[in-house]
View: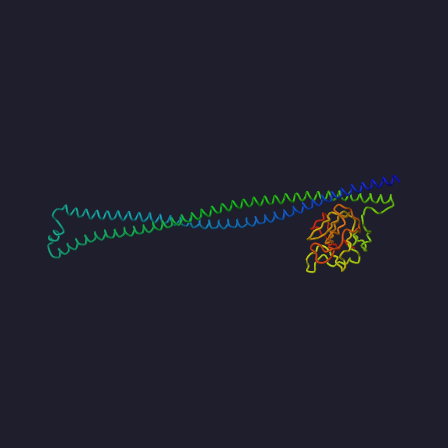
Length: 416
């Protein structure tokens, strides 16, 4: 008798230690999954910010290219203006040379006229009148008068012609200088605009570099978070492997104790046999999560509009308040009561590495807690209508490791 009591005490201690360890592992895995989810949200947020930076960068690069085109256009115009200014300078120089030549011709002609007058004056009393009076005949007089008149008229016409040439050249030169001034002003204006465009281009080019650096930093953050997620995944796998080992040891220990004590009660704490669901067992080792009378699936993997449901619903008439069973042995990973989303729900990790989720249970009906070991067919809560639900039903999911939302599988493939 003493030996039996001693064995029972030892068994109880082992179970307590294993449950404590399982609770610790489950809590740790939940924390790691939550951390990973937070990291994924950070990655999404950072990638969105990176896309915004990339969009701004692309727009800025486009603006820089447009400024480059404008600068090239202004530089081309400035180059043309420089050519025109050089041509104007050449023409001004030619006009100046012509003007100097005309002035020289005018001065020479005027000098010749002055010298002729001086020579006549120095000849003494001989004047144009003397030349005329000394004529021997009327014909000679007329001829002499005509010659003198022609000489004087030629001198004056030549001077007038030279003066007109000077005036024309001076006017042309003024027009050229005015044109050069306008070209120079236009060039200065375009150089100013070009300089402003170049400054704007440099500022935007610097901004592009800053955005590129920010983009690199954001990518580095994303890479770092992804690296953290890889480490978290490794930790989750390690915890799962250790938890699986502990669960296997616990199950073997229970089987050994059952053999020794001739009992198969275990530690179900209100568990039912696998037959409590009234259904058979699938190749995956699962039973139906509700009594057989309510095992008809009312909503499958897809909604009627084609959207993915990601689960199956059991919603037969009268199902409200019916028991919800664990479809296989395992350990409770989460048991929470929400006012939205899943409402009252439970997640169980099974020995085969699969996870099952049971949602929308009645308020206050959850019968298990995080870290607790459950047996196949054990009641874990009651069917209800909590959370995002429109009518009493059981929302049932199957997930692969690590049991997150993105790991949902079609339950049809695992149910009987």
